[in-house]
Length: 331
Image 1: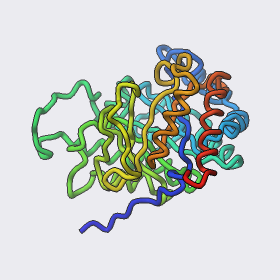
Image 2: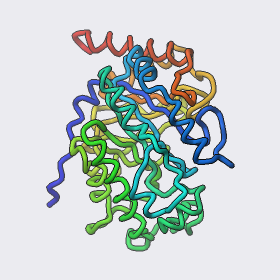
Image 3: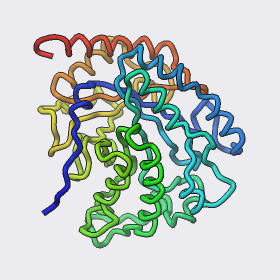
Image 4: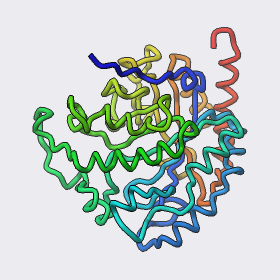
């Protein structure tokens, strides 16, 4: 019998809503990663004003914030000796530890820092994929209706990836309150009694803070699910919210995990103009949270860490509604 116990999600539930930013080499400052040098990436990361960003978020009422550490390009906004030891130099990891600096700034204003990371090596960085022994997801043969033993578990890769994660988790310790892990699209890779598996993955993520919340993304889908007992909340990635009219959270938990959804306020992830009228964004958030769920809104951010005014306005209205319902006897 498993002795695993999920982390306490009470603070997350009471937060009601939070925010998320795609701070990536191929989107930050509306620039592309093609031809990007390590020096230019470092200049971008160095320009991020964490104190101003934290102050802006504090005005909105957001109680937690996710920062992307990196994604497909191989450029990450935090140094990691384990990663560089595997991939080699020159490094695409920033010299500045933006995650730690942001966590420190957010803590000062009462906001919890959380991190986004893919479950696989950066697909558009061939050098990293080869070093980690992790071919891009779209380059692997698909097995239909197979069992877990037929899936390539990529054990060597997973052990290296967990060791890299563990370095970050231990360094940030209790200043990091959670993780959103992308790309766990085939849970059969992780559903095994022996490691590497969902449990060893979660243990690496929680190495510096056993109460850090963890979620493994199965991809966009309805209904929102929890795919393992080793996650504390649902990733809940959604795109077309208005089409998902059967997504009513009937309770706070989904198979023991805190119900949570993540979607974007803009026209796409990390960009565009606000796609919803203020009233719709406010009332949708209220609808989900009134049924025990938590909502995270992805918002654009400029390369220096400034949030566009249209999004600040909308977030402030969402935050005001959440404070109103929390203060009411039935909230």
